Image (tube, rainbow, N blue to C red; front, side, top):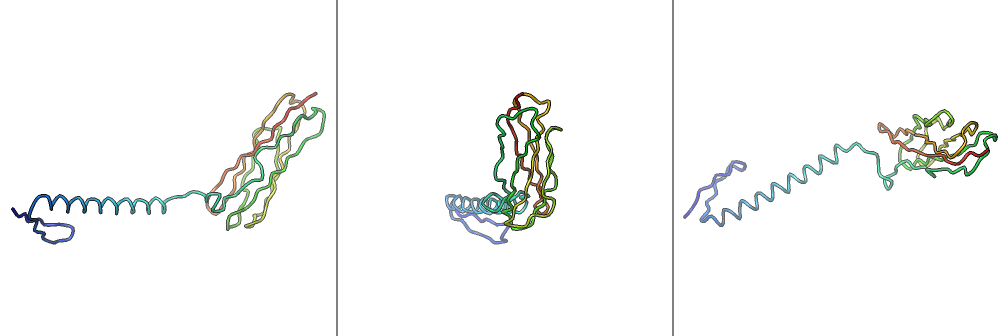
Length: 162
C-alpha cells in the first residue's frame, strides 16, 4: 500500500510505501525539530542573560569577607578594618554605595573609578562605646560594573569588654 504525503514545510510530495517507513521518517523529522528548538532556546537564554561575569571571567573580588577584632575594651577608641576590593574585570568599576548596618559602624571608601587590575579600599570603623558584648556588623558594598550592580557584603565582628 502506498501513501501520498504532502509536507507543508518543504512543499514537497513524498510517496511512502508502508507505515513503517512513514514512522521512521516522522521520528527523524521530530527529533530534528526538537534539536533545533533546543539549540535556539539555548542561544536565546545566553543572549538574554543579564548577569555579572563569573569569578573566572573577572568578577569583582574582595580580599576578605570577615574581619575579627577579637576582644576590645569599651573605653578604647574606634577600631578600623580595611577591606581591599580587587577589580579583575576588563572595565573600570565604581563603588557606587557603601552602607553599614547600624550607626555604630561607619565606612569610608575609594570614590574614584577603579581601573582593571587595580584595587580600592573600604575602611569600616566600629565604635565600641556603650556596646558591651559580642557584635557582628555588616557593610554592604554596591559595585557598578558597566550597567550592572554587584553587591558584596563584608562583616566586622568581635567582643566588647569593660
